[in-house]
Image (cartoon, rainbow, N blue to C red; front, side, top):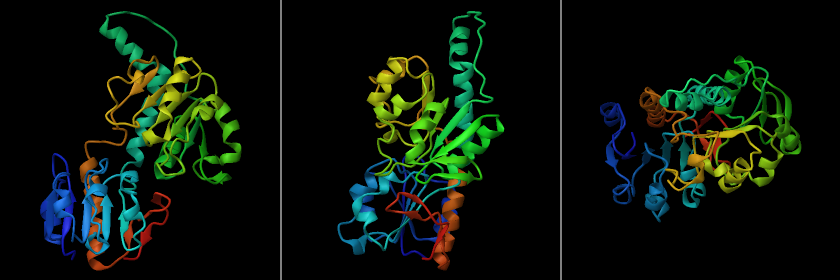
Length: 327
């Protein structure tokens, strides 16, 4: 049993607290309380992850730092600070698997909303305007899913089922991928961008992916294409995106994540035609909290019993590479 488990939360504590407390000596910390409660802890459940609180509270003395940190999210970029990454004794795990299907459904919904102009239909309804107009098909359209991890694969499978032509983009090119068929690497990315009607970003935010969609990538995209980002805001140069949208090179975008969250009220993205904005909710569902705690409880039990943990993050790469890791 961990000597002490610290649960970082904001607002509401996670479900199943009674079960957690039976398994571990548990204390709960807000972001303000974390610097006082984290030193000396054996494990940390980061129930909230989009925060600098863990980095700011991390003990200077490595002997006082927790040996295991579990993130209740798929993305762990906020936890990849040097003191945690460079300490080989700290294991980092995440909630891989929880968000795959919900995010895929959200992406399909966004593509349909953009193609069928559901926002425009809603505006016309609000004004009581009867305005018939044609819409785009998605069957036969090409989607390039940039990010071939579990979330990207779930997106690929659902878009394929909807009749779209799906291709992938990742670190390594291949032509026999079970979900994407063709995966484009850096050498063939530009030609792939010229063919894609929808470019879907589902990559983690790492030192290699930060700012990967810059002005040159946007310029290489097919005129009239649409960009969808359900990965991380830092993947995109937002100023360049605004410029390309304003110039009419892109037909629109659906953005769920941003470099600064909440998105500032003064951002031009709020009012741009063809742009849909959502508040980082692509993977959220009414059953999300229960699914997240189920993953953590499984790992907590494994930790107590000395068995391999699930969803261990390669801290150098910033995402899960292997399924398990021996404690």
